[in-house]
Image (cartoon, rainbow, N blue to C red):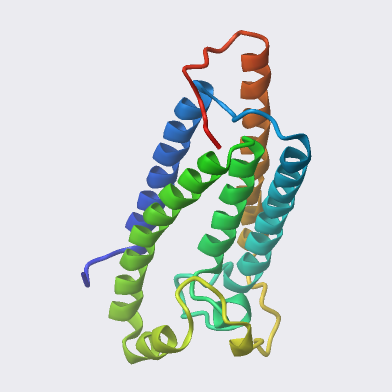
Length: 205
């Protein structure tokens, strides 16, 4: 695994997420949400919107710490001191939020599970790369900090200003994809309500 390169991992992640998004969109077009439960639906979708904005803010926060030095050093402070993969963590939160907008607990669960499996493979590859590059330093970090679920007691702040590059700010646009996905979900539901899109299956939950 020592021949792993970061660009390959980035391309893999992007392509995996594109494939996941395409599959999810295809299934969304031909499925309808379960029968409405007004109060539950309102709360469920509101929590989903909160999750989407938490994801956007969390990814931006994480990028302030890693932007411009991701491939130059092992970042272990800020959000990276409580979880080794805060960007993946907040992405999963955002995906759960988008799933909630479908009005289906089943859709949300399947989306999060599929995304986690894709992220898991990417994280394994990245860990192999970091281990080959940073050796014992990464091993100590890996053995101390959780892979995904954060441990707030481990928080460590960096001594200098974490933002190292304007690319970190530019990368914030990645988070907007969650809002775009929400818009797509709403358009699909409107198309189904107007009879413009076929419904082949009504989800049970």
